[in-house]
Every structure is written in structure tokens, then in C-alpha cells.
Image (cartoon, rainbow over all chains, first blue to last red; front, side, top):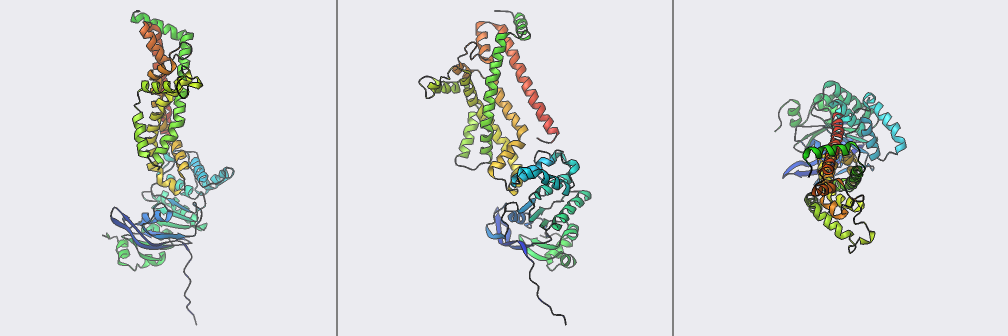
Length: 241
Length: 235
């Protein structure tokens, strides 16, 4: 006879605990409880203005919440890395951008050359290593930004709509990098509006609306059947007001 | 008084013949001006960047002051430096009055606010773009300033160029603290003023032409460097 045993909750990389944030007299994040599993790719979905990007910035420590706490066990400043929707690269070559990041992360000068070579290979950036970073295409710039974020081998990688406005080829290249990063053991959080992307990449989905978490589920379950009417309406392509 | 035609002809003869006195004045002018601009950049770049990025008491007051000092009258600076370096002044014992060093000090004081104020604006604009990215990478304030100054290096050329223009054209301050002493502190602008008052238009014109050429060449070189950097997407 099969005996059902309640499984232990998966280990967490990070947890937002009752976070609230008020901006311009409006509650943009409201009593948000959101956890990020330590393994796999977590997609945060939701309509514009749901507070997804702000939540990501709170996780990265760029924005301090008015209330609540961001809990994790990371100790190094380089353990959490963030990639923005619009990458901001320095006015230098790709190689110099990576060298700058490694210097900031405190990697000794003697080890930087080897690490840069590893990063260029990982991001398939070898042919453009000595090109001015800001002269590259949008997709290439985003790849550089991602690889730069990985320079210090972060344990948690946060991605804010990294493929917005990219063509399918560039999107595919970024998604490959995301999968490779997760495969190396880092927890990845991606904010996305793209249901297809969440289906392709995510192991877990967190659905937000009006600054709060509406639904949290394994990605496969979420894509098959959403429990909340907000998520159902969103995935049906309806406007959530 | 010579005719204009004669004066121009004599001026060109002095320039083409590399007249020793003329060259001495030109070289001293370059030494004083470039030294002053270099010192102003060494002080003004980090000062401007700190005003753009730093958060400290009286930052706004200091910014207003630096902006106001951009229009500092050269004769007032000359007078101030003169009082400091004269025998009765606090630095009189150094014996710097009527030396090129005094002229460099005066011009540095004149140029530093220009470099600092323009640097503040350039770095503030760049910081708006880089701020979140650098913070997400854990950059401290010093690292941020270093990054912004390096990435703004081609735009900062404009700040240095503005300072150079001010220093090259300046006459009041260097006249007061240098004394326009022949073979010691005579520079192009003070020599032009003196020779014109004496009616020696050839020398004055020759120096004026060299001053213009220098200004155009330096501007063209820096603009060329900036354009090249923009084409390479570094600026």
C-alpha cells in the first residue's frame, strides 16, 4: 500500500517577507510574501505595474522596503547579481567591461585574465571581445550584461525582462545562457511578460498583481491550470485593471 | 606706428624665422598655461565628480560657489595671489612673486572652477545612466567616481579645453603676479599688451597669430579625439 508522506518544502535562496513599499502616495508593493527556491528558474509574471521589477530591485538590495524584510543567507555582495531590461554597458570594449566587473568584485588582477577567457567562452562572446560594447546589437549587449553579471559566480541571478524587444535569435541566445547558468547551480529569477518564455524556461512561477503575490506554483502546474482568476485572465490575454 | 601691411609682413618674418625672443615667450606661455590646466584638471576632475556623486554637508552651497567662481575676474585673482605671495603676505617667504610659478598658481585658481563645474555636470549626467548598474555590482563611492571619470574621459576633454581657452587668453592675473618681466615672466598675452602700447605691432601681431594658431590646433586635436571616440561608441 502506498503511503503518502508530506514532502519537506524545497530549500529557499531568498524570501521576501511581508514587504510593503509606497511610492508617490501609492502602495506599489503591498504585504508581499514571495519565496525563491534555491534550485531552478523562477519566473515572476504579472501585468505592468504589478510590482515585479521593484520586487527584483528589493531582492538585489537596490531599493529598501518601507516594511518587511528580504531574507537570505548570502554574505558576499557579489552573491546576488541583477541584469536590467536595458543593459547599461561601460564605454569600453567587451573585455574591459568584464575586467571592470571583476575588479569591482575584488578578483585579484592575476586571476582576471583566465576568468575573462572563461566568461567570453561561456557567453560565446569571443569574436566580439575587443569591440566597443556600446556599438553592439541589443542582443549582444544583453549577452555581455548577463555574462558580466555572472563574473563573480553569483548564487542568485535576477533578470528583469532580459529579452524584451529582442529578436528570436537574440532571445534564444539569452535563454541558452539562462539555462546554462541554472544548470551550474545558481538560482535564477526572471521577470517576464512572455508566457512562452516562462513555459520554455521556468521551473516555478510566481504571479503578482497590484503589488501582491496572487499565485505561486510549479511552472508545469501553473501553465496547465491557474488557480487565481487574475492569472487566468492574464494568460487569457485579458486586461487586468 | 607701422602700417598694417608692414606689421603683418614683419610678424610673419618673426614667426617663419623662429625669432628667439618670440619663441621664448611662446614656450613660457605654453609651460605656464599647460601646467595650470594640468593642475586644474588634477584638482577639478575629482572635485567635480565628488560634487556630482557625493552626499555631504554644504554640497549644494559648494556647487553654487564653484559655478559662481567660473566667472572669477582675473585681476581679482591676480590681486589675491599677489597679496598672498608678496613679502608681507603669508607665503612671502617662498619668494614666488614675479616668477612663472606664481603665474601657474594664479591661472590654476582661475581654471579650476571651470574644470570642476563642467566635470560636475558631465559626471552627474553619466551617473544618472550608470547609477543602478554600478550599485548592483556593489561599487562603492570611490569606485563609482573612478568609473564615471574614466568613462566620461572624452567628454571631460571639453572641460579641459574650456579651461585651456581661459588660461591661454588670460592677461590680468599673470600681469599682476608675473610682472611681465622680459626673459622671466613675459608670456604671449602680456607681451601683446605691452608691444601694442609701445606701437610695436609686428611683435604683437606675430604673437597674436601664434596664439590663434595654438588655440585652433589644440581645439582641433581634442575635437578630433572626441569625434573618433564617438565613432567607436566610447563617448
